[in-house]
Length: 87
Image (cartoon, rainbow, N blue to C red; front, side):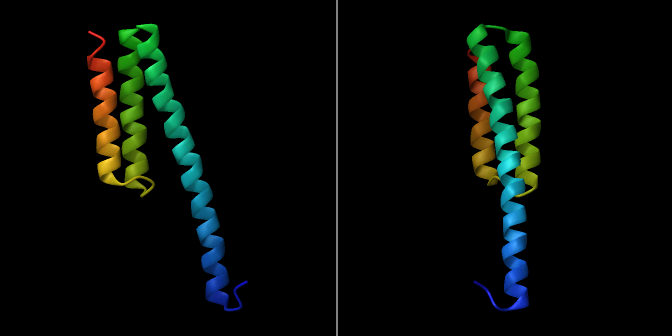
């Protein structure tokens, strides 16, 4: 256990940020699942709308530092590819 005040604060801040990051990651996963669900159902319009929402969520998470930019780029690219293969 930390004895120094600044170390105690770092522990609290780290826990808070970890919770925030976990919530954001979970939300992005849910939105991405909606894209794949629409693809499985064969609903092109719903997939396009879900893709737009997913891209937005991934970009926001990246901007907040939850995801690395290359990871986000790869994820978006794969989602785009999956939706485009529907046609």
